[in-house]
Length: 341
Image (cartoon, rainbow, N blue to C red; front, side, top):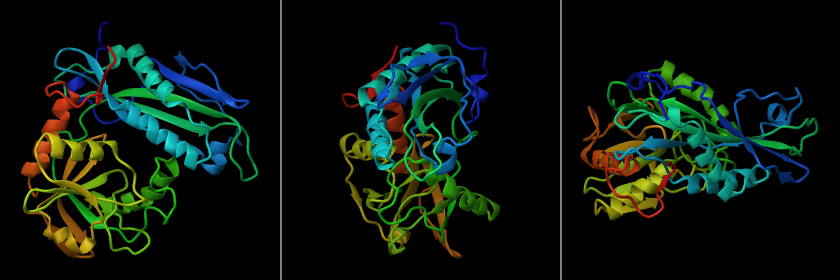
């Protein structure tokens, strides 16, 4: 199939409408068969549950063109499982996990012309989401829902190269204890918007959120998990019941152990020990790993020995290995890379 006439190398990380999307509706206790459609608009009543009580969740993954010209996506089964967990927590009907993966394949195949070519630095971003659609005025779950998957070609998260980030320790909590911090609910991101704009206005790239119960432990930022490297080269990530279980983070931990032979563990990380780490990064679907140069704790700066001007050596190896697996340059563990075409 002939590719779209797009300047792939100059794409930004922004939405542009592709030709097709997948849509399935839940009514009378069951999901319909779903279909690939052209219409990108959603028409809802003004009293739809999504507008009144924010009953919504979403996922994010990417499709890539590999070195041999195949189109693949990365671990969609984990996105399906995580969305199922989000739905259960928000009292929404689970879209079956096997159908989720199949729908991802269908919508990527339908939009093959929008999948950027290998070597362009661009990818096809895939956004599955679900919303409550029927009218609800009393506080209760919706009875009807819509599951959709949109796709859009995006450029690299960092145009012009990776620049280490400066992060502040936030005075605002991201999630409540035993709340919704561990699911991908739209409401979690809505509450973080004021705080991220405030951070930007004060010269910071992101917020470091602490655990909401004691405010002594590192959790995550508004949209990414933390990953630290100790001075002896071990990889450490925060463990908490109120942070999102990042697929990228889990994959990086496995890469550290199985591909790089590093010690890697998930554990509680105290804010007081952050100063002792050699490297720090933020990990997620959009950028894989973003290096952090410094953390500002209410005027006290914590600067990492590796990462002030570029990626530290361990984070760079992790990044190169995982992106190598995603792009087909390195053979990944069984089931990680799912071939679509």
